[in-house]
Image (cartoon, rainbow, N blue to C red; front, side, top):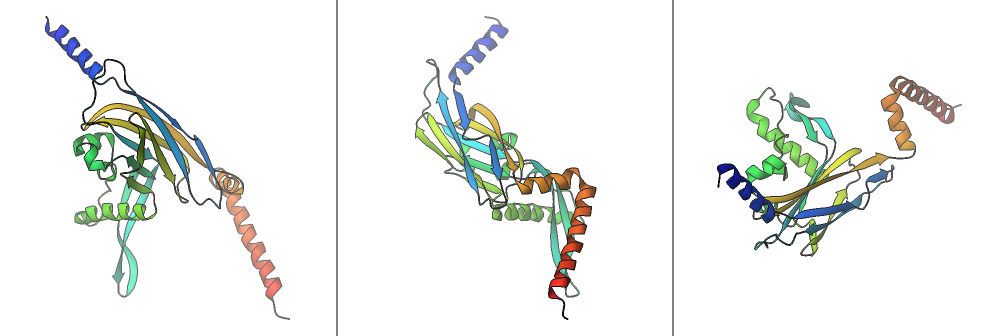
Length: 253
């Protein structure tokens, strides 16, 4: 058997051993929010399919559902007391970081796979390599700014890890609840589903959903973005009219 034939046989055998596939579906692909939005969930359903030749997995299956929001530019600042006044004394700029990140799994991120594999696939907050700020006036403080960035976003509910976020309904059927908090940014959210066994990724599926404003809030947001000059003039005029009405209503004779 030639070397090429041996490689082909090995590839075929490996493919047969990893012949799992997934079928996934979201409860909705578009979530509309208004000013009184208090949070919601999008449900992901999925099924694992195996062909007749696929070997059984002694360790069973693990799942990691990674949800990433639109990329954003964020500046994290440090306040210090200068001559008795609190002032911004240092800062870091984070470029193209996820405005929202959620990892839902059936176990902790560190138990799904090793850090190298998770870093390549951005599975887990500690594995997001994009969260590397530009150096400021004190480069030695950079790790502290990363920790502050993560702490702030965790407190807002925008960065989440839930080791019980995936539920196996049967050995091959699963569901996951994707949390949408009130301050979730609008835009397109990417969803990657990883099927893992023994620390190895067997299959991957991708989908997405959109979070959009609706009603008067959407009109205001679109006007501010698309018609900046007219929006600014209208806001200034409204402020003048409001001030005049207040002065008339509360003036003393």
